[in-house]
Length: 298
Image (cartoon, rainbow, N blue to C red; front, side, top):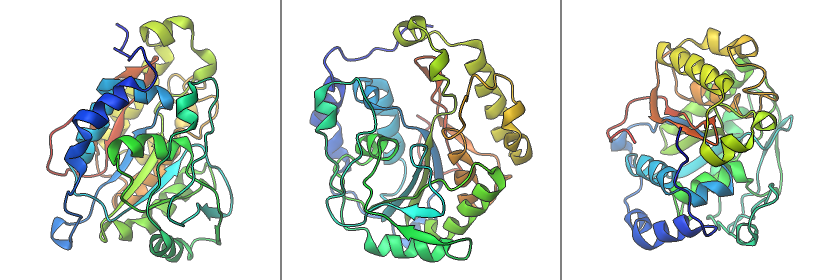
């Protein structure tokens, strides 16, 4: 497979996007009840290399424009595992967690100062309280949250609350998502952020430079995509035995946010729509939404 066209200057693709396309998000009307419930999303979040990939930037931004502008965003990222369930800081000007290394200096100076999210945090706490204790933290948004959101909603004008992953149990996470489902009817976008395959220890220079797709990555992606098209949660929950394992997920935190997304969709057994497909560095970017919403597939 040919290499993706990445910008040669760190962040150059993102700078070009901000100068040319990002204005399309300015002044968009917010969600109203007439729009109906928003879908729940599962997306591959990338890391700073997303800001170097004009195709991926376009895919995520076009996806966001196909949906009503949310009144709030609840994001569950692979990079925060904590039990009991914890919520990120809610004050305006949300700090960021730069939980990566080896990238250009500019990525450690990026900001995403979202509005006060106290009201949204209260709604999330209320929705989840019947499941288990929910604790409030001062933690900022990690890169599984702020990197994709900085592309999808580049002006940081939507309140964001990040929620920790309390377990790897698929059915417990489906229940957690189901408790968040009511928020979708209030214009809140529920986002599970991970990566459909994430076998970083097993990637070679060919994967990073030429985007050669390892067999295990393709096999797992095909298996998961087919199960999602069938709405087969039971098969997805058996992911430890899936083709390509354990190479596709030597640790599973990038896959399990999918179950929160499915639960939040309202009908976990309902087939989903694939919105973003393809591979980056040999890893599957497949990203889905739980219900059909007007707007072109990216």
